[in-house]
Image 1 (spheres, rainbow, N blue to C red):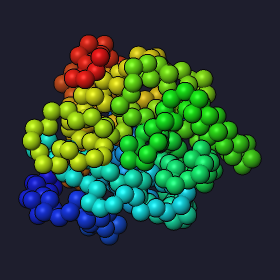
Image 2: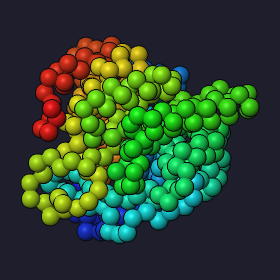
Image 3: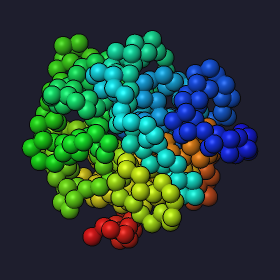
Length: 367
């Protein structure tokens, strides 16, 4: 399968990236991607925020924005899938072109701007799969032109709590002006109070268990902001953090013609920064707070590094662009080989083992 994708990739990469993405969704929707031989092993099972995951590898939000193919994505080997980001009202997002591949760097720059079909269509699809197995989280955001963005997040919680395995509050996209202001001070606290109240109120009224609520943060944080966010999420009893989204920074990427395109950078160049910020959060939050590591995961080695730096779970997206649908199975197989080679009993046993090592080598631009 890997060889087949590598043979097809030059033709795929001649397509506009957004067009290629749409074709990949269509292939999954129509069952054109063969079922993978996914390794199943108790050593990869983890429990996070009260949810039992068959393995710690997830598909990050952004791939399946409208909840069109969560079950097909799960069949690729992911232990969980996160759909969205979903906003109350449909929106087109930013003008095209708005996705740019940096092939030599195995990276992508995007400035999509929460393009999605809105809550109603996604909720209808998720209702249709309500009795199916598999962990599907829902990532919610705010409309760009909303008069009350906090109300948009509350609406997302209310709309999807019954349909999601967990909920993610996305305050980290760089492509919606002003959104990252929710990562600081009184704005962060105001948002957390509102969404936690909505989550708890829905659970009380429906007499159902509360769904875990995660917050997704950016890697581009000012000095002291990690501690500020950590204090807020502990105070308001958030269930976990997803670290991180794309970055506005531009590490040394050579002379790629897309280098200076506006938007968030993802893929391999994000690995060092996102992993460093992950380790900062683990240090600030202690050993018991759930963390999901995202950014630059494209191999078993990078997934393991995230776990060593503090992640309970990891997610990927851009790696699929370069390695295709066989990547999740290859990563899980590599994880098991690592456990065999190091004689480690369980994947959770490597968590936090290299937090200090990561923090001792900050990436360029980090004070």
